Amino acid sequence: MNKEQFLTNLHDALKRLPSSEREDILQDFREHFEIGISEGKTEEEIAKGLGTPQQIAKELVATFRLEQVQETATTGNVLRAVWAVIGLGFFNLVIVLGPFIALAGIVFSGWAVGVSCLLNPILYLINVAIYPEIFEFYQFFLTIAFSGVGIFVIIGMYYVTKWFMKGFVRYLQFNVRMVKGGIKNA
Image 1 (spheres, rainbow, N blue to C red):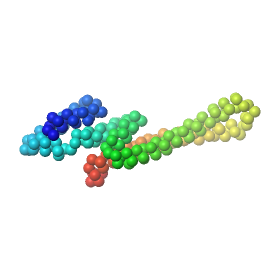
Image 2: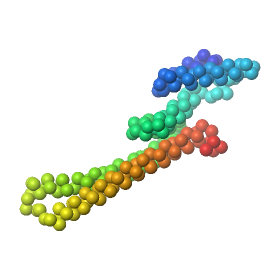
Image 3: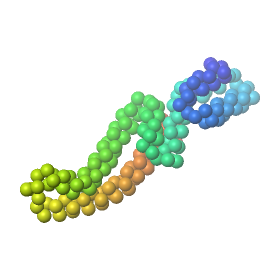
Image 4: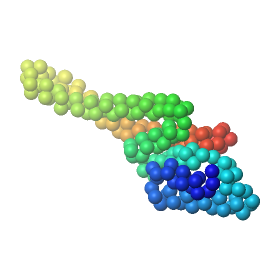
């Protein structure tokens, strides 16, 4: 594969990146080819030494998505980063998706418990409005106590969610380093 074929394939594989980022990457690879040619290598040798444009693009997209998550950790950015890291190889499907689903389940269930405890008095009062004969003061005060517990759970889940996000992003970064260079770069 010559320089133009390599750069065309790389350009096509990087379509998921913004155009400015894509052009910076392509310029870096053009320079890499120029340096290699000045050292006496052929375009084919340089392209072979770099690897396939598709694998290079997968690694670069995963790195870009992880950088986006570090800048702003939104749900969309995290999902795009997880998908990009999974795209690095089939092995990552199991290694990344399994822990992601487990952590997402823990976070979702924690938020669900907090919100349901917080809404408990409202649901109790709706039930009393429908069936007034079931009203008892101790049940009402118990629901208020659960509401207080719900507030604490929600506050705790805010910090747990941030902690899980940071930890999972570190795990994704570790995974990308492992795929790129094996254990020596981890």
